[in-house]
Image 1: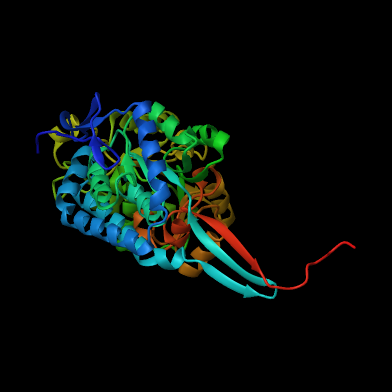
Image 2 (image 1 turned 90 degrees about the horizontal axis):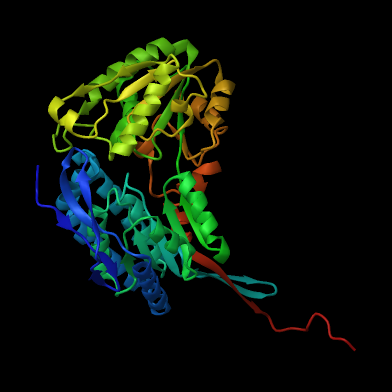
Amino acid sequence: MSESPITIDAIINGEMYKTEKHEPRENPTRPEEIVGYAPVNTVEETKKAIDVASDTFTTWRESSIDDRVERMRAAIQKIKDQTPEIAKLLSREHGKALYDAEGEIGVSLMWMEFACDNVKEVVKNEVQEHDTGKTIIARDAIGVVAAITPWNYPLSLSTIKIAPALLAGNTMVLKPSPLAPLAVSKVAAIIANEFPPGVLNMVHGEADVGVELTSNPKIAKIAFTGGTETAKHIMKAAADTIKHMTLELGGNDAAIILKDFDVNDEKLMTRLVISNFLTTGQICMIAKRIYVDKSIYEKFVEKYIEAANKWIRVGDPFDKNVTVGPVNNKKQADYVQELVEDAQSKGAEVIKLGEILDQDIFEEGYFLQPTVVLGAAQHDRVVVEEQFGPTVPILTFENDEEAIKLANDSIYGLTSSVWGDEEHAIEVAQHIQAGTTMINTAAIQGLDVRFPFGGVKQSGMGREYGKEGLLAYTDTHVINIPKDGDLPYIPE
């Protein structure tokens, strides 16, 4: 589906800002095809965007919530109207299947609507009368937010920051990933056009732009989704000016399969397969390690492979029969393949899953056939490292205590899942170290934007989604008003 490439620009002070240099974004399905060109902004251009956002904040913070909500709802409607075109562009630049791209837009809109519906109640002043007087607990806007977003879910992981930030009265400078910059730029432009100039700005670029966004003293909050190692650099860069932070980082999410799990439940098994291979396994909250009670291991593996072979269809993202597209970029594909080969070299069995629908396209693009790895050890790389691609190891455990120990044996703690009898699963879930634990579901299938999402340990800090995700873009401001009365002490 070759089309003419598009060119996008930065957004500074409500205008498309032309820059000297642009970089191509290839189609991972057909790497010879250029989908579009994104700007490479300079540090000086980034400073200009920050200055504009800082100046705009002084007036935008005084706007009414009703006005902000009205503007955001107008943007929501325009995104809905343009969903087919945006989804098509996202699928081409990212490689995710078209149904998956449409689903990402759906999640984005769901959150934006939740934020509009709830922001007024969540950030309103709370007034408390008490014996010593009255206290007002206000929720003030923080200032300029730097939002740095990744390539795997570029729309939802940008709007998850844009909506609460702007609705709370902040301004923003957004930096999308160079590996998926096009569709998110279209969405950001739609939103920016509904707000006063300078409220939502967007720049593109490499590490130097990121450093400026995380160290500039005019930035009051950093909202970052991405890798743990990058987050460590961000925290160091921000240290001199003590910024607010929301960091949603990597995960190596465990799925525990209890002995009372029904291996013959095809729908449940398919749900598990989807939780491993949706978006070609490139989701921070996907189930990346499976631990199975030893008593059902052999039957589980048999039924899991059956379900995977039925659901997984690898090929062109625009083929309606395809469920798994290419990996987003060659570097990531090579990394996943390296983990699989490392496991094989240590004696693990690697089984290919699903069907390749078009061998020519498969060989042309950044495709990997999904695999399951059997017989890996707990400390093999494919188990320890976040593979972020279409492979998953299956290991065994003797009892619930060992399952919990193995699941918690990770520097990460984003999400997890427990599969089996509900009461039994809940009991096990309460011992897992994770920001979210799902029962008999996992990944996007178990996501609910009404409730907070984030990680523990090295999977991040702070929460997005839910009411907590709205409050994360506010400062608590306490105003105390004493009652008239005698002073506590007057010296003679």
